[in-house]
Amino acid sequence: MCGIVGYCGSQSAVTPLIQALRHLEYRGYDSAGIALGVGGRLFVEKRAGKLANLESALDASPPLAHSGIGHTRWATHGGPSDHNAHPHVDNDGKLAVIHNGIIENYSELRVRLQSRGHTFSSETDTESVAHLLSDLRKEHQGDLAAAMRDAVKALRGSFTLVAIHADAPDVVVGVRRNSPLVVGLGDGENFLASDVAAFIDYTKRAIELGQDEVVRITPTTVEITDLGGRQIEPKEYEISWSPSAAQKGGFTHFMLKEIFEQPKAVADTLIGRLSDNKQIVLDDLQMSADQIRAIKKITVIACGTAYHAGMIAKYAIEKWAKIPVEVEIASEYRYRDPIIDVGTLILAISQSGETMDTLMALRHAKASGARVVAICNTNSSTIPREADAVLYTRAGPEIAVASTKALLTQMIAVYLIALHIAQVNGALNDRQVEELYNELLELPGKIQAILETVEPLRALTRSFAQNNIVLFLGRNIGYPVALEGALKLKELAYIHAEGFAGGELKHGPIALIDKGTPVIVILPVAHEDGLDEKMKSNIQEVKARGARVIVIAEEGAHIEGAEHIIRIPVAPALLQPVLATVPLQVFAYEMAVARGNDVDQPRNLAKSVTVE
Ligand code: AGP
Image: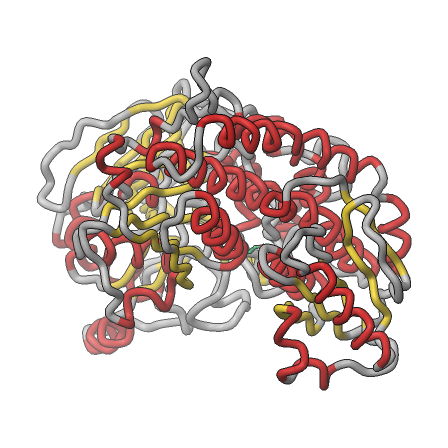
């Protein structure tokens, strides 16, 4: 939440700062602002609303400066307004600071600083830092990095801070605690940013900053210290994403582009996972066969869409590997004394690798002695760096706030883990594993087939655009799909959408059904367990009460009572979510477009939820 950028170099700083904010806007879009160091004074411009408002304000004639900081905000303390927008400035008008996270002790700091004569002009927690840094910088004879080190010692919470002072305009200083900050190493220019997308147009060389590390950049130098002022040797890495991955590439929205990238994302995540001797290759887990055989219980921690991938992990691991799996909403996990022992393996699933709730749950599990494996899409982000091991999904950058391709690759990752454990502990034999793996390899082609026949669904969706409620029904592995369909619709169409387990319908939710209520049913794969028949009964029950029923069903399945049937290719029951999710993504996308909503940046949301 909140996107941060700092720049020092030879370009007119407005250009790389605005370009970076365009790439970071998905992290928050309640306001945007910049501060530039211009010959002994600061130029500050900030505007409530989207970045476009700031850009128009700057159109007149932005001053020439070669360093600056920029911010795009997701509001926590203080509503989205011009005066609460970042950067925040000290009373001398010379020091500016931007912030991502929450300063938990901001009110006591504010009282203390006011008693020392500082006047405040916003309701934010961040402004306290501007005043605090200002005092500390004076105490440290103008050394902003030393001031930042001391400031951090006085702060509680999670934060990334970046600051600039007009008297030394070619120095930008940053720090991180629990929130992300990366350094971009350019040629005669350097960057600080919340993520690499901010500077990928300028450089592919980066340094990930560690916890409680302070960084000071100039156009030609990067110095990193711990809070005691000791130098830290930076670990440089090469960014593998190409700049074009962060462009829309001809699609109207990032979300639509990312939906259409799913066949490739799934295929990429599967590359090289079966050896010539038919063993699932998951060296990424860094677990010996003995360690895997010693797993007694698996707990998945995740939030939102990633939580739905966790639910799928439960079905797959319990079915194939015969190990009990709990799935926990990460924000609830550490507050209820979970039972963790040496036989517990934790799977932390996160696209961004920065979700604070998941990170805190991970830390709790590690502190209790559990081994943590992350499933993550963002290289070198905090969750994989703090986990014992990481299996990276290979979805590429996901820019739209609504997660699509990341989810499908998370599903692939959990299937691979389930198969690997099942093969090692002997719950499945090599032939069974190979057959299932071959089914996984078929999925990219099947997703592609769905995407090639998606136009009628888009037209159908538009006919539901005025509805203010949509219900989703699933059973077994279709249940998390129903939850995901509802979550996508809520966040994009801003309507009441709920997912239910089909069997729960008669225990309450059926009271919601009224004449014309759209109900989307994920029909289970026909199987000897008869689940599909039970779901067909649910279809009749909701239809009898006036519902408009849309069914997602595999080719060939016989269905009565549906107003519309969306066909998906045949796949083994446990793999059906990879296919059934795709039409629901398209449905939510099209609803958002039809209702005139901002698809890539839905209201009140941010891509990375970096506060608890
Ligand atoms: C999904 O569409 C959401 N925007 C959201 O639920 C997201 O999946 C959740 O915040 C978890 O994010 P993460 O995968 O980056 O941890």
